[in-house]
Image (tube, rainbow, N blue to C red):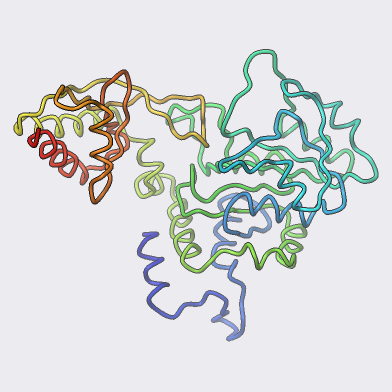
Length: 362
């Protein structure tokens, strides 16, 4: 649905910035704002081109020339060496670090609040975990501190799940709806990753802050284009019904697949390859949701393990990646594995043909 929506917008006239009801110029954010506010339970919403852009825009609007108080344990570096302190500097805000790497207490934030405090910033450490002798202030606690001192709370949630993930076996991963309910004035998150849509940065929260962001000169430089907006709108419409979202959005569909369905897919691949004279085995394994989302939790899966001594695992990997549609397998314990949670039904024959042809040549 997302791909079709983007194609439709690419090929025809569209109402990107046109209000058809009043026959005048409109806002590009209107196409998704109502959907986001309904799903997330917020007053307003807007979208930019990725979550790093969303954070820069929020900080530039809310804390330029003022301090943003953040725990030292949350000064993360995301992909491509982008760091929270650097983003803060670019936004014109002043970074006020509190606590230590492994322990930050409520009084650390309270003691840091002063006349020049613009906001309390919490950053979800979506790509790493600190374990052991640790303590952090929850979002709900931070919001209570902010409310008591009249200071807004900004939450950079990052990965952006719109549904609880516990039923998929993923625990302690925050979701947007709970973050909003905790009282954060502004929440930012990705439209891709756990949400499952196109790359984008979503901002939801209080109307007065988001209205100010829409007027920020940076907004034009960071704005989202019509193709991404169309794809995101289609993705968000799927979230009107959780079961529909689980069936239609690939990220959720892969997480929700039963082990029986995974085993049946593995058996189909195994049967095709057996007929072609290729040996392998079906094994139980663990898969990772993603390096930038839920980094420490593994989920049970079923994999097909190739069994051949004709080529080394590394050589097999190189050849598979060289196909017209590259096949990226995982090498573990000197075996080439195909995780059935990430293989779609219509990809089984393509993978089988590639392996059979490659090994027949040797």
